[in-house]
Image 1 (cartoon, rainbow over the protein chains, first blue to last red):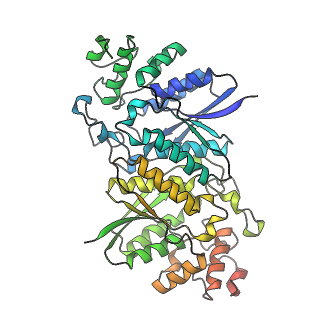
Image 2 (cartoon, helix red, strand yellow):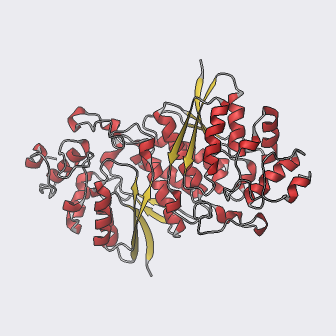
Image 3 (cartoon, each protein chain N blue to C red):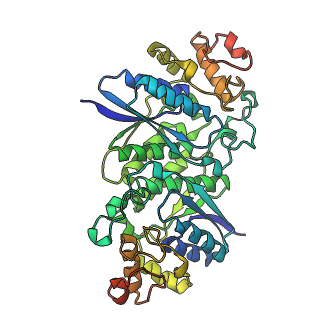
Length: 230
Length: 230
């Protein structure tokens, strides 16, 4: 008897680690879903599809959500520049209510399939810049989903990594054999990755903290690559 | 000094009545927003745009949200039939978490504009078939939006008609001079309207309860048209 669960899979290192973590659990049948929300780094959608296949997920859905029309973030508006990490402007990359919307469409997709358990992979580092990565937010969203579901039923929103730092998630993923060279992180969407945006900087620091080289190709010989301090 | 407010405008009679109600209030600057979610009755989007102009709204936004890809409802899936009202299957028309998603994209659109007050027009009649029309749901969603907003700020989700029956909303709209002949209601999306689906049946009953003929054209001489019982 297997229990079906849905996983919101971005194609980034955290959700892919969550996918490998879920597949390692006995009796779990993983359905993955990605959202094409007009992200500049849409290459991550290809990574998500490929990694879902590699992980042996039962199915992989792709939902469209046009957040670009809402605007306000360089992650969806090609007219705005992605700030470098050293500019200290990660909050400028916020897409308003992105996680509410992504979780909402994934929950709808899960509901149609009769799946009550939805997994997401925010990590502790995200909570500073993104208020919608905090567990307090997900507790409230879970309650809202329960109240709004078509039939009275439990909707569980699981965030197993919300109290773990990104370098701890990488440590777990290295144990589980996550193919990190196939995940995508860079906000600019370029491959090789820019190595300078907030997302690249956090990724590099997480590998450095594990004293393991990041297997991803970077445009520049990013300084954090050659250091091994946390 | 005017206060900007956002209104989620479907083009149906309830949200259009809310638009006329808002424009009658002094000092309110109305920004309307519609969502193209793949609805079969997409003619309502044209109605929304036209009525927004007629009402003198400051701007009218249209956001896309592909709920059709999620499936599960005849309102977004042309392969499923819209049930007749006498089949007693309105719950089959539920689009999972539609109001969470519609409110979420409208709230994101409002946040980018610095608007804290968002209006929606669910009515009391909706609450039976649609759990996400209840005020308990909107209270929880309002709290979730506050927790997830980019900056700590109040996000107010107003549902001024949630305790009013549809016939009371029509009575208000008739007083305010709402051009009901330009609103759209029918689930099938046809004009003239089918007169048989749940949406048509409720609309006809609301006019009948006010002993006023519905100015909309119907395909059939719908029975409720010639009756005046509530």
